[in-house]
Amino acid sequence: MNKQSGRGLVGILISIALMIGLTVVYLKGGMGIGGVDLKEREDGKGETVIGQSMYAAKDTVCQSNMRQIRMSIATLTDPVSEQFPSSLQELRLGSEYESCPVGEVAYVYDPRTGQVSCPHTGHSSH
Image 1 (cartoon, rainbow, N blue to C red):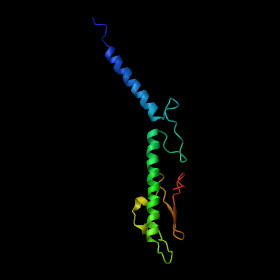
Image 2 (cartoon, one colour):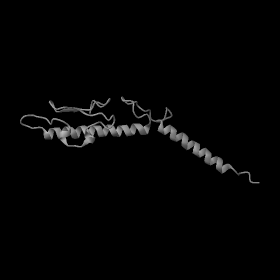
Image 3 (cartoon, rainbow, N blue to C red):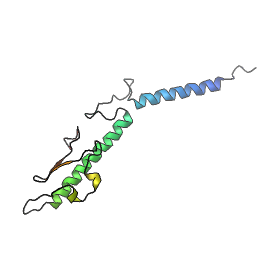
Image 4 (spheres, rainbow, N blue to C red):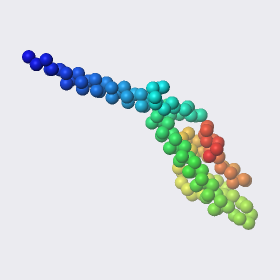
């Protein structure tokens, strides 16, 4: 009888277990095993590496939206009377530019000053 029967199956099972273990370590951010320690976001979103990456991308979209809105406000402001657009809808940028992609909260716009801000936690610098 062959003494090596069953070794192939055991090797495959060990390989699968190692791959699952490494995947868990990667998705949870290393957990102090030489991986990256995840910094907690101010809003508490994104607990895994993938989640944090997704929310970092949405943060970038929010920054881009704010820049686009500010440029549109500057373009539509009457240079003589310094009258700003009365609302964000007047900019005609589309509904995706009216709220933050992370928290789905509407941007705050003051038509007297022409200032726009994102009320989402952690986006005050945008």
